[in-house]
Amino acid sequence: MPIREFRMADYSSVIALWQDAGLELNPSDSFEGLQKKLERDPDLFLVAEEDGQILGALLAGYDGRRGWLYHMAVHPFGQGQGWGKRMMEELEARLRNKGCQKLNLLVEPSYSGAQDFFERLGYRRDELIFMEKWLGG
Ligand SMILES: CC(C)(COP(=O)(O)OP(=O)(O)OC[C@H]1O[C@@H](n2cnc3c(N)ncnc32)[C@H](O)[C@@H]1OP(=O)(O)O)[C@@H](O)C(=O)NCCC(=O)NCCS
Picture 1 (cartoon, protein in one colour):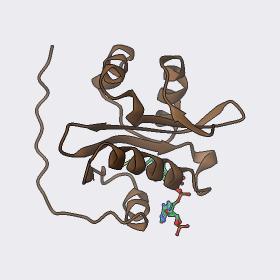
Picture 2: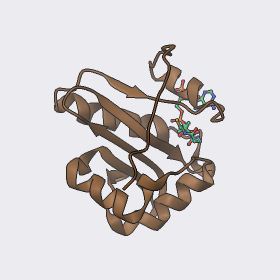
Picture 3: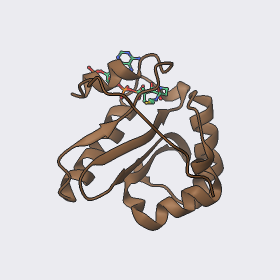
C-alpha cells in the first residue's frame, strides 16, 4: 500500500526526510512527542512508501472542529510526481469521514513552492496574524 499510517519504526526515516526537504522541526517532533501524537489520531499521520522507502510524510490532527496540517513534505528526489497531491487527498478523505468540514494549515514563508502547491489543491490564503506560546514542560 503506497500511502499508509506512520509507525514508530519509521521515526528516523521520517525525521531525515523532513530535514532533507527543509522543514523546520521543533521539540514536539521528538520520539516521545510523536509517540504522544499517535495516542490521539494515528490515522492522520501518513507516509508514502515506494519499494520500502519512505518518500513523503504528513502529520495532521483533528480536534473535533477543524483539521490542522502540521508537517508535510515529499523527499526532494520524489517531488513533482504527484505524491504530495495523493497524500493530501488521502488526508482530506479521512478528515471528511470523521465529519471534519475544514482543514487549516500554515506555510512558512521560506518554503518556496508550498503556497503554489496548496493553491493547486484548492487552498486559499487568509491574512491572519499567527500567535503562539510554548508552554514548556
Ligand atoms: C510542497 C510539496 C509537499 C509538494 O509535493 P509534490 O509531491 O512535489 O507535489 P505534487 O507532485 O503532488 O504536485 C501537485 C500539484 O502541485 C503543483 N506543484 C507542486 N509543487 C509546486 C511548486 N513548487 N510550484 C508550483 N506548483 C507546484 C504540481 O504542479 C501539481 O499540479 P497539477 O496537479 O496541476 O499537476 C513538496 O514540494 C515539498 O515537500 N516541499 C518542501 C517542503 C515544503 O515546502 N512543505 C510544505 C510545508 S508547509
